[in-house]
Structures are given as structure tokens and as C-alpha cells.
Amino acid sequence: MEEIKTFIPGVTEDIDVTDSAIEEVKKIMEANNIPAGFNLRIGVKGGGCSGLSYSLGFDAESKPTDNVIEKDGVKIVVDMKSFLFLTGTQIDFIDGENGRGFVFNNPNAQRTCGCGSSSC
Image (cartoon, rainbow, N blue to C red; front, side, top):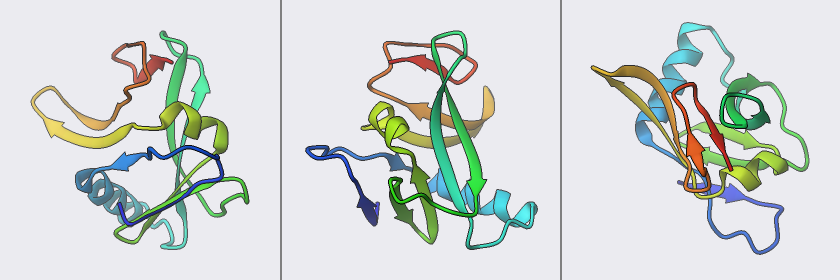
């Protein structure tokens, strides 16, 4: 991870986005003609079968209170509330026999299910 800027005092752990996840984000951006200046926004919202679900999307702007991670030319933004739930999480991309997609390995999750949700 090249850089992380956090606005939460005392938080020392960050979000780890693997190289394979970054490469897939770049492929998605290229395939969908998403301008290079766009950010990958990662978040957590209420819902899903375990209480919370993860979200990934592209955003043209970052907010002053966003936590910003930049890795290999990809700028990742996380709102402050989501950052609290995602601290220490590894975001990976898998492409194998059992499926293809982004995986959130969140040590804060008390339980998970197959739909990309967790309970923190």
C-alpha cells in the first residue's frame, strides 16, 4: 500500500487492497471507459443476510472526510463510517473454479454469508 490518509485519531490499521484487486479495477475501468481521474469508492451499508453489505463503485469526486488510499495509480476512497467497519480488511479479487469476484476478508466480521455481507 503506497499511501493512506486517515482522519480518525488513533487508527493505525488500514485497508489492504491486493495487487490482483487493483489489476481487476483497472480492467473494469478500461472496459467501461471510466476516466482515469475517477476514484474507486468502497463502502459498507446496512442490509444483506448478515447485517451489512459491501459496496464498490466509481466516483468522480472524493469528500473532505473520506479516507484516501492510493495504490498503483488507483485512488480508493472510503467514507469515515465505512472505514471504521473496514479497518484491517483485505480486499482481494479471485478468479477460480468456485467463482470470480471481489472478496472482503474482514477480521471485524462476526459472521458472513455468500452474498458478500457480514455482521460487524
